[in-house]
Length: 129
Image (tube, rainbow, N blue to C red; front, side, top):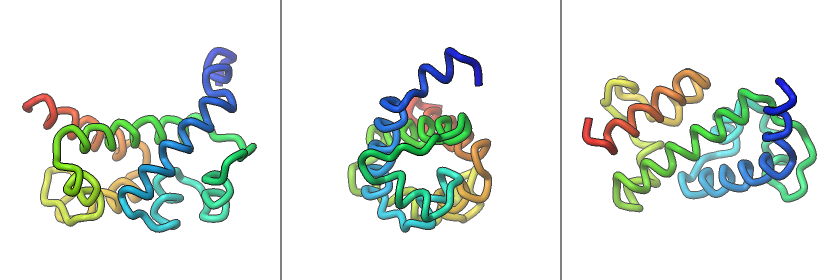
């Protein structure tokens, strides 16, 4: 990571991202294993990371995941009613990215590339594609 990226991803940025993800995980009703899987971290690390004052370091991949997942959350909240937006990640989905799987499970299995495709898919829906 270059110096500019390191500076942008300082402790404050990381804390804000983790706080937003904690809310997202609660709103979506994610289990600890699901939340940890989305961020590609162990369950014990997620349990520490969601507490205020976490001093661990998130890698660039994890920061990108945070950003994309917050974007997914935002797209869902805009596109659907609040109730459906909060259930959507855990419902079976026959859309082209999911083949009947739950979006959260597909994103965990597919990692950052799948999370980015889901974000693009939802952004396209939001913009009338």
